[in-house]
Length: 90
Image (cartoon, rainbow, N blue to C red; front, side):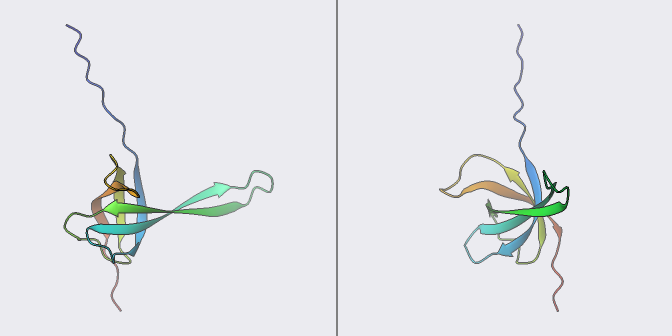
């Protein structure tokens, strides 16, 4: 009678693609701004994630949104959901 559906909350992050040399995989650099616990200065913390890009639509320099999912390989558990901004080619 009580059929409750569990909805998994997946994390989404926004970052910049720093490498697209692998097939169907991009490396995304995510920056977050945190306050130093003692001095109070805002500092930048970075993390790199490998994300699955099925049709290789994300290129180096693009700003993308990635979403957490099941592990796809040893280092890859994120997927590219959309390209927010395409890199400017000079």
